[in-house]
Length: 101
Image (cartoon, rainbow, N blue to C red):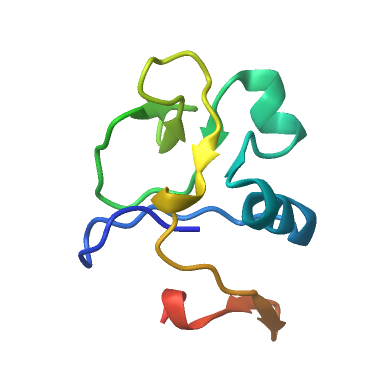
């Protein structure tokens, strides 16, 4: 899943197929077990700030975007926030997809 359009404005999420199918079926997702227990959607960072997206330090050298939602009270990620979804393929121990090239 990714965020807004623009080469520097994407954030990414690696989801299970079940989570992706639920998002397609219901129109939103609270993510997986880790997301539900922490109260925000975990994403991979690029350079984007948005409504409900907060960059937080997880240790001394890593900052990641977390999606809480507009009210900062753990809202489901809406399907219309997703620009593109693509299945990852593992090749030579690396994830491959067109969004990562």
